[in-house]
Image 1 (cartoon, one colour):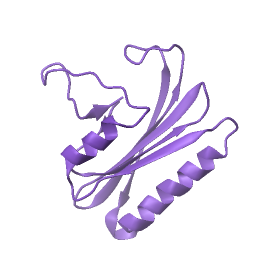
Image 2 (spheres, one colour):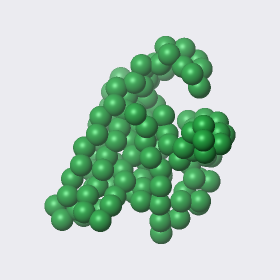
Image 3 (cartoon, one colour):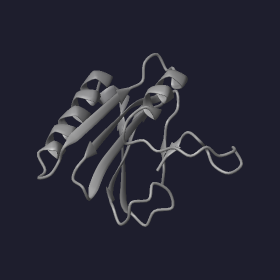
Length: 131
């Protein structure tokens, strides 16, 4: 499973839960729904790529007519605050999309300290996906 980062991304949230794990969530939107994908990562080694880390993936969808974008973002922030209460949790990051500008978003995303990127051709890999 991967997390798609596109011009329809609302935001991404990350928590360094401990020295052994982290949590990552993205929210994307379409005309009718908000689609949330998140994962827990449990470190097995210190590799950024081709790692044996265990990941538990989850997803959820909500209708846009049931919640505003502002409330959705507030709910994501509440989730981050709850996870920061876990023993050993240290830091969190949030990055929100502005004006559906994926290039500016990706430039900011690439600069985040938890991001490790490989460059592939389109045939090898969709570069807009997060693992």
